[in-house]
Length: 275
Ligand SMILES: NC(=O)c1ccc[n+]([C@@H]2O[C@H](COP(=O)([O-])OP(=O)(O)OC[C@H]3O[C@@H](n4cnc5c(N)ncnc54)[C@H](OP(=O)(O)O)[C@@H]3O)[C@@H](O)[C@H]2O)c1
Image 1 (cartoon, rainbow, N blue to C red):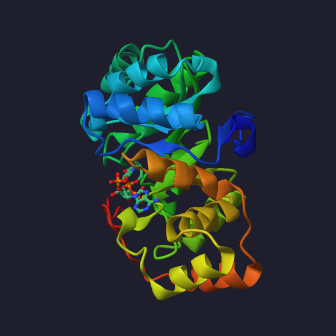
Image 2: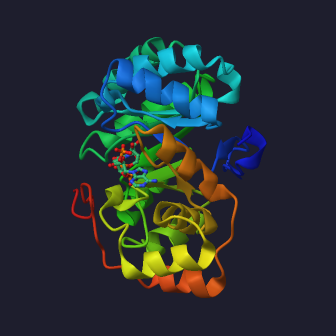
């Protein structure tokens, strides 16, 4: 697949973000992570999602170098660890990330988790980095509507992105609509529900009807809701399969069937009650 076939979302600041990226959570630091990043880029991915907490930012740098793909063609996201919350630590951690990633800018820098008492100060640090041109876009992760409202009241830049768990079994419709009405791009982590629900009969039925795999159906469902998806795989064959989820359409009946699977099923942490 060529880069041009991956559609891009236009963020609220005009920057463009590929609708599909390669997730790097639990890709073991070291040669594995470097290999996965390089393989993804060679296959045609142009968007990598890492985090300070994943401890594989420097492997992303190695993967980028090994792939031969120019830095400016790749959208790189990293996230500030909760342990680095607060203005000074958030800022210092950003420069450490820059160094590990071997780059002089980051496409998207996210607050990984809404740490109570420190998240506004962290956001101010991100706003300053953004005004200095060191990161093209800034955003948040695991923010509920309540956290976003707080940010709207206390910040001066609207986050470009909110990255949350999102898949047919956790269709966060109210959050999606809130983000869309506030021009915040929703981004789906664990878009495959960590492969725990790939054998669901409705997913299987839509897969049969479309001639695509269950994983491709789940990813396509997210993108068709205008949500960016970042599936993770350490296997080349699955990286390729996931990449090929951009090239087909689900009918409105199929979308409706998949929407109906929502059961508030979470594979990851739940920020609902995060103070
Ligand atoms: N902001 C946050 O708090 C947060 C939290 C979680 C995740 N994330 C981000 O979101 C990314 C994706 O989420 P995730 O890793 O939790 O879960 P996921 O992408 O939903 O699922 C990954 C799992 O699915 C398997 N898989 C991948 N493609 C497959 C396919 N085509 N067929 C069958 N199985 C397949 C993978 O196995 P193999 O690797 O063995 O192929 C892995 O076990 C992360 O890597 C990370 O970048 C962010």
